[in-house]
Length: 286
Image 1 (tube, rainbow, N blue to C red):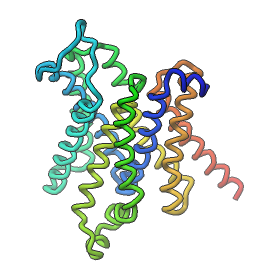
Image 2 (image 1 turned 180 degrees about the horizontal axis):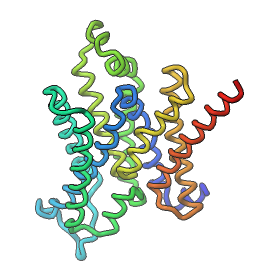
Image 3 (image 1 turned 90 degrees about the vertical axis):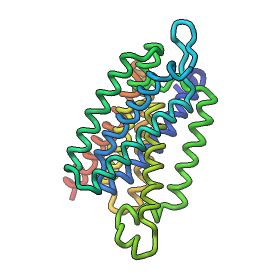
Image 4 (image 1 turned 90 degrees about the horizontal axis):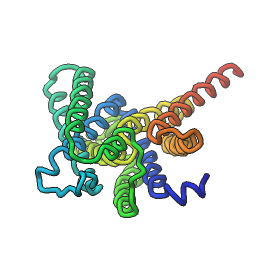
C-alpha cells in the first residue's frame, strides 16, 4: 500500500496529511472556545471564495488553455479562500458585538448563503469540470511538488504559533478575563487565532474539500474529549486522532476504491465511534 502511495500519490498524501493535522489542531481551539459549529460554516465560506475566484479569474485576464482545462495556481486559490474566510469572520464578529441576532442564526445564514454561492459560481465557471468536482469532493490528487512546498510552509507557520504561544492562545480562549488582568492583549491574540483559523481552513479546503475540513475541525476534538481528563492530554490526542483519521481514510479509499475526501471524513467518524465504544466498555467494567 505504501509503495502505491509513494509511486502515484505522494504529494497528495503528504498535503492531505498536513491538512488533517492542522485542521484538527485548529478544531481544538474552536472546541474550547465553544464555536465548533463555526467550523461548519467557514469551510463552506472558503469553498464559496474559491468558486468566486474560478468564476472571475478569466475576466481578470487569467488565460485559459484551449478547452478550458487549465487549473489556476495554488497560491491564487489559497488567496481567494483565505480572504473570503477573513471577511466573513470580520462580519460575524461585528454582528456579535452589535448583538444582531443569535449566534446560531448567524452561522446558519452564513452556511446557507455560502453553499448557495458555491453552487451558483461553480455552475458558471469556465474551468474544467474535473477540477471543479475534485474541489467539491476533496480529492487532493492534483497537488504538485511546488504546491507541496507552499502547503508545507503554511503548515510550519501555523504550527509555530501553536507550539510557541500555546499558553497564551489557550488563556485568551479559555479565560479572556484572566488574560486581560495578566496584561495579555486579548484583541491581538484573538486576531492571531482568527488568522490561523482562516489560513488553516483555506489550506484544508484547497486540499481535502469543505466536508472533510468540517469533519476534521469537529470530530477529533469530540473524540479526544471523550478519552481525556486533562487539557494537556486533550491537546496531544487531538492531532493524533486527526492523523489516524487521515491514514484510515486513505486505506479505505485505496482498498475499497472510494473517493478520498469522504473516506477521510469516514475515518474521523470511525475514530469517534471507537472512542464512544471505549468509554462505554470502561464504564461497564467500573
